[in-house]
Every structure is written in structure tokens, then in C-alpha cells.
Length: 182
Image 1 (tube, rainbow, N blue to C red):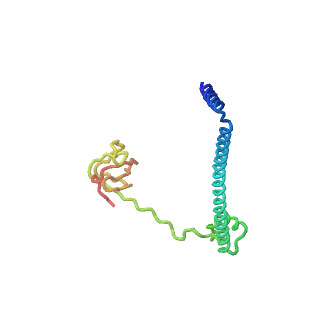
Image 2: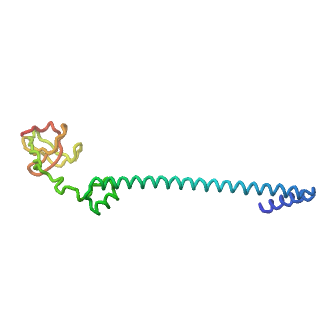
Image 3: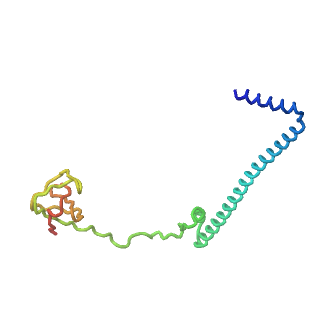
């Protein structure tokens, strides 16, 4: 339906041009409109091409500067270690901040002091019968401690303590129910 309406409008316009014998003037106007359209489209295409060319040129300049900086860093890395071998030169190429392996002390990082001893175990005695809970603030009972029973203190946060009984039960209880033995 649209094609039919466009065709009718074109037929009517051509009839008006023919009726007033204005073919020469219409041809000149059409030629000017086509020339302006071609010139405008060429300008838009040329401007887009120029912007792409300018961005490519700027990217190439940044890449060249980065390559020159990397080369300078590699030369500085190799200059720090005059007896560097070919493997060290390759390592400097990958990471200019690296230390060539031929210059690494093979004994670096070996501990010269004896290891620390673990902290001694502390024991606590229950002042009252106490229930052991599975978590610090939990309500699920996992064991019991009788009054006067001694247990190993695992963790003390001031309000609650984690203990291990002589039977192997581990759990949390209120700190006020226990006193330190050693």
C-alpha cells in the first residue's frame, strides 16, 4: 500500500512539472541536490577515516614509547648484574624488575634461629557443674563438666572459654564457671 501511495505522489509531481514545462529547472535543482548529497556523504566518510587514522597514529606512538621504556628497563636490569648469563637476560626481558638467578644467594631464606616452642598448656578447674556447647554462643550441648574437674584451656576470649576434658570432649562454656589452675 505504501508503494502505491509513493507512486501516486511521484506521478502527480511529474504531471505538475510537465504541465508547467519546468523540466530544465527541475533537472538543475535535482543535479544540485545530488551533488550536495555526494559531497556531504564524502565529507562524513572522510572525517570518520581521518579520526581512525589519527587514533591509529596515536596508538602507534604510545606503543613505541612503551617499547623504548621497556628496552631501557631491560638494559638497566642487565647492567645491574654484569655476570648475567643468557637465561638471566631472558628473565630481564620478561620482567625488568627481576633478579637474575645466577646472582641469587642459594642460602637466602634459611632460618638460622631455632623455631619457637609452642605455648604451654593451661589448665582450668570447674567451680560448678557446667555444660559444654558446640559453638561459642550456641545452645546445643555436647558435653558436661562436673564441679572440681580439671580441663585443658584451648581458647579464652574473656566471656567464654573453649576447653577439652580428660574424656576428650571439646566445647564452649561460660568463663565465670572456671578458674585457672596453672
